[in-house]
Length: 271
Ligand code: PXL
Image (cartoon, rainbow, N blue to C red; front, side):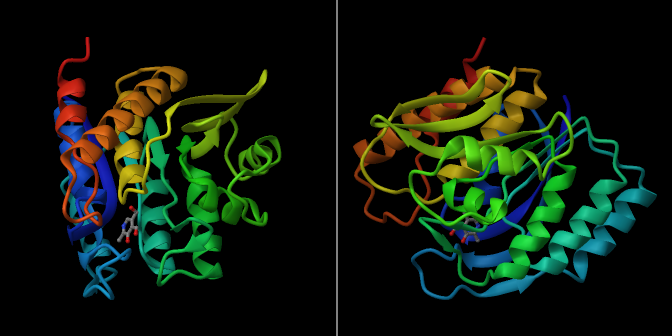
């Protein structure tokens, strides 16, 4: 059993980020070190202003304890962090770890806007943090912010991905996660052959937390040794399943993350 450090917010209500990632990675047989970067009463999209507990005082104590206890992690996943200071604390700790894999989902915004509480300084801090990553998983909004390009929902993928690759270490991959092409939604990334795209038919609606779940699935599969293409293919298929299940359930509260039952079943029955 390998261990994965997952650092992102713990939002009590909303079925996203750490709660989704722990379920997915536990189903994939990881021992998860679940590190909340901040505590929120709900996520920030749709419930009004959440009660937030910033954990900047606690994080250095955690890292100190882990160092004394000689805990080390081979794989890491970072999602929503919350503040510039927290980004820097994580960056300092992770820079000292010998990780085989670090996946960063630079959670900052969606649909052309930064999430509430974030500003340009946060974008700059995220540009620093992703320098440590092996794979980054921005959505189209986050990709434009990181690349310093104006937002459009149909970006020039070659231009955006080329700009993102320049922010990363050699050999690392930038994958944009919510690209729409010909009625399909999926991932785009660069290879020597040019822009690659794999996706699934786009279903109606917009669902909180799909990016967080997708990132956990991709990190889990990459950590298991699946290739980038295979990991992205499976992750998109499973997220399609989760959104279809959510639609079929006709959930009364649309602010909740996607249904995970079918996705967890698919993980558990993967050969
Ligand atoms: O799903 C992205 C996300 C993660 N964490 C928090 C959020 C959001 C999106 O709104 O508010 C706290």
